[in-house]
Amino acid sequence: MGEITLTIDGRQVTGRSGQTVLEIALENNIDIPNLCYDPRISPTGACRLCIVEIEGQRGLQTSCARVAENGMKVTTETKDIARIRKTTLELLISEHRLVCTTCDSDGDCGLQDYAYRYQINEHRFPPIQLALKKRNYTSGDKASVYDPTKCIRCQRCVKICDEVQMAHALTLCDRAGSLLVSNGFDVALKESTCETCGQCVSTCPVNALYDKAAVGKGRPKDIQKTTTTCPYCGVGCQLDLNVNKVTGEIVRVTSQVGCIPNDGQYVRKGPFRHRFCGQR
View (cartoon, one colour):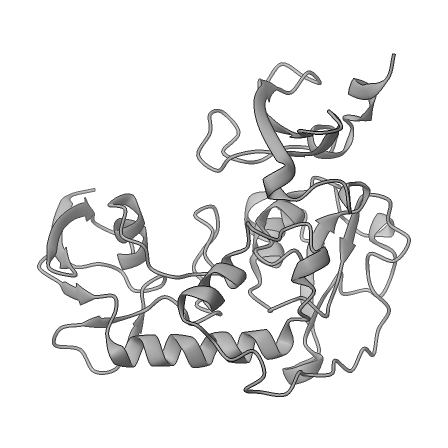
């Protein structure tokens, strides 16, 4: 791919042909708010937070889906953009049950950070009451839990299951205020094509999907991470042991996107089968 040059917020940066505006911005340490973006999956444009202004083009563009062009001039923050982002966040908050005080992601949550940055009004829009027509697909599952009252419909879990893990275990069902993540067959997760890899949990930006065994055992401020190699096979996946600094217990296992060789991915033994570490 050829190299291209563009200007973002008055700063000249370079990228590769075919990259999106958001990808080039992030590579150059230019922060554009986003919640539905994960570098491992195709663009969704669902959260609408990454909107930018491009000189010579009408309207605002979603930078996660807009392919960058040579000579492009991009502005990531204006009064209008900030106003629209604030309203978008207030709408997202109306769909997201606010339980930050007891949430395991408190202090490491993009939605929380952006809400603070743009000083949103949490009560501008009335909370949406979900019409739960189907049973929760994680009911009875021992590994992960899906909380639809926190879900912002970013689709990251669905896409990572389809495009990265290729298990095709998750989909979206219903529409509007009833839109939820499901396995599509109204059966228990263990009876679907789910491989219990934990990818959906790892990519969820708002803790709507979480590790069941880790609940209440430590928030980000309580955790110290130690990088290690998964002991289960010869691939050498790099994992981060999230250890509670007070109890010394391994609370959960995560992996950083971009690490070699697994790029933040793992199989079921990596994220969920680590309890033996605390046994003698």
